[in-house]
Image (cartoon, rainbow, N blue to C red):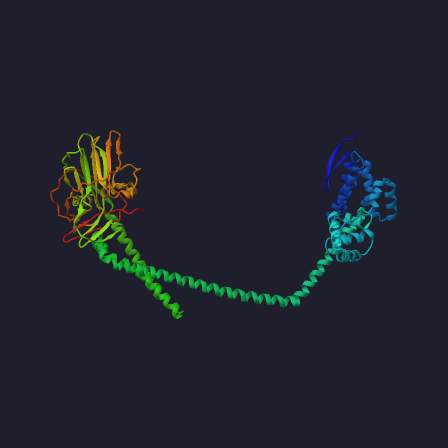
Length: 593
């Protein structure tokens, strides 16, 4: 019993005996070798394989279990072999084919004509061309018939045509085209059909090339020249529009920058009465004062001059440029930049180190088991306010909120208040001196503690981020009350970015900033576990103390020294200052970054 295998022939699965497969393989290899040097060899062999697969499948459909040796020999007889082509004896070939295969299946495949759509003679779908080839009639006859049916038959011709288009396959391979014309489907005819198709394609391409060459030499060249001129004109117009838009954009940008710089210059000029005290308190030494104004005027003034020159040149249409003007303006601007850098570095060194002086306030224990903190009333007549009342200007005074209040648990049954004055400086000694010069008088009336709204320093002193922190130590089961102004100085959102204020001595991080309680009192009660926040109650205590924020020198303070501490820091803080008469009173507040 012979072994049966499945092979893939022309994308069709064929069961075949292994001996028959060997005969088929040798036959196909001989065909590939024979047609290797001919044009369209791959297409010829592919069509032959498709035809053989079609014969085998039809054999199996008729009841054959598999393809045998006799079947392969019969196919060879039908299709022909390379030896027969080389002999060139058609009579012997036909006799060998007839003697080798008398099977009616093979005979039907040799002579049967099938209906296909002709792709080579199609106008729409190739239906008329296929009918003409099948019936040996000119396709024009069928086209006329379908046209008459479409006009006089209420569209029936169109319907029939599309039905035939759908159900009739298209003759794509050489074997199918041979079947469409009723010719013998063998190797020789397949080769002839493929080569004829290749030659027809070449001729068609040659005709197209010839027509295109004639077109390009005649009308085509004229059209090409017209297209070229149109393209040049189009790109020229688009280029001009782009140039105009670009120039307009940069001109608009220059005007905007000029207006911004002019606005900044006007604002600096208007604010100069306020800025001058800041400059006097911030800058120290000849270098800083000498380079400050050149840095400001060159950094802002040179761009203004340059943009004005640019706008004037554009408005007047002057295209000639003077490169020495550009060199001069660039040199002046970089000079201003260098001056600004030198001033900034010098000022930063003055804020390099921090020192803190700690003192205990001589607190008289209150008669009640609580302490009430209030901000002392300001007797100075305020003329202008800025930053939502955080900065207030009077005739000779500027008041800025700049103290912090924190609460800790006392170690015994007494209240304690510790005042920490701190400042920065170029050295520890300088920072300590500036910290000791801070005047922050705290006063007491029974259980009410009045806190000044600002700190005071001597007129001849410099601003080096001076600040004050009050630490209140509260016994267990006793409480602290504060009005809305004092309460604003412990809110976490105001200060959480500035870690060098303290060692994280803060109120409850979950405390809410409730602006609706500005007229109320915040009550905090100390428990063994820490602070217990109570409900806000409105206080009607009308106790007040007349307070003066002016610097009064190193007067006697109601405090006791504790210790001095110092630490290094690299950051600087922004501040506002105030002065009056021969002394200066100012506070510092930090803006959120």
